[in-house]
Amino acid sequence: MSVTEPIWTPSSWRLLQAHHQPAWPDPALAARAVERIRMMPPLVFAGEARKLRGALAEVAAGRAFLLQAGDCAESFNDFSAITIREKLKILLQMAAVLTYGATLPVVKVGRIAGQFAKPRSAPTEIVDGVELASFFGHVINGDEATVAARTPDPERMVSGYHQSAATLNLLRAFTKGGFADLTQVHTWNKDFVASSPEGQRYEEFASEIGRALRFMAACGIDLGSERSLHEVDVWTSHEGLLLDYEEALTRRDSTTGDWYDCSAHMLWIGERTRQPDAAHVDYFAHVHNPIGVKLGPTTTAAEALELADRLNPDRIPGRLTFITRMGAERVRDLLPPLLRAVAEAEHSVVWICDPMHANIFKTASGIKTRHFDAIMAELDGFFEACWGEGAWPGGVHLEFTGEDVTECLGGSATVFEEQLNHRYETLCDPRLNARQSLDLAFRVAETMRQRDAVPSRTA
Ligand code: PEP
Ligand code: CO
Image (cartoon, rainbow, N blue to C red):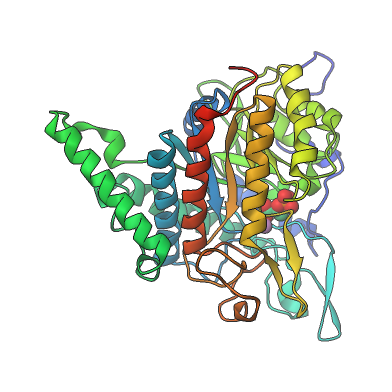
């Protein structure tokens, strides 16, 4: 920071243009809610964010893989131990498939414990002939189609904080308390998945892991004392969209004096709020968490470099993740120039692929969906583009649910268009169901296995 630059504070973003922020009907009430959250304990602490940054540095170096996944929008209504456990199960299953299948450490980051605020393409929508404010996520307004529900209510930020705290508490208990123990690998297979082809494949695979563990024990390795077999780190993340809320949880780390956004371990900047001179980029440039940025099809190489310069001027490995979402048809053309520019500028970036957000379409009957084949096609294009440029394809960013929903089409146990109505429960974007998620993990693990056969420019 130059000497002439004014001292930064967590509220400095207010001097800049902040896109996609709610119009609270009474700003004084919003200020009071921010003040109350500011007095509450942080949800994560700086040392954890630094530990995640270290894990992501391994991804940046091509020695690990990032699995970032969870809901499009968490719900205040569908909030229970069961929904948290079911999401965790599928995350652990996918991570096990990737770790064992691709023989790589997998950094596990949930879109969870705070993924509430949504940017929308239009501020209003017409429902049954009535114009209503769009649904902006439960931390801002309600999803019910009434004027009252859609009115932004700052009290929801306080509820969002408490729900995040409770979710994180259970996640910590599950991941450190035995549920994520690798000897439990069979129990993560859910009833409705177990009978499907992916579920059966997973069963065989879990048995193989069991055999590998018994083999190691037979060789004399003391598995009981190996912490990494019994506990895992599952980190939290969400889109850092609602700056009132992020500001309220921004704290100065007592050991380093640096600012951290203590609402989650990792935050990302969305495709619609990544303008280099606007509030979001400025805010995240000043907090020290690992930061992601979504890069959509309009991103130029110059923009990617400007973001890297602003968000990671010291080129710290693991600090910056670019989450590309180009679309299945265009990823092979649009991604290589970005990869090349970042490599030539010698920036350290983790590249991961979000194959969800540029592959959305509406069916003839108006249902928002994605096709599993398009999701896989974007992933294939991402891997090819990275390998072609000698970059490390560092991971995937997905929207899934542990439930047996019918929101995305296709997959090996195909969901057909006429079935979308059966269980279409998402508050926002269509999510992969548990079977589709597992299917995807097996396919990505197979692709990663081929990596040794692919020539790399940097190797
Ligand atoms: C999202 O991740 O839910 C999202 C809104 O993505 P994007 O910013 O890439 O459109
Ligand atoms: Co989404």
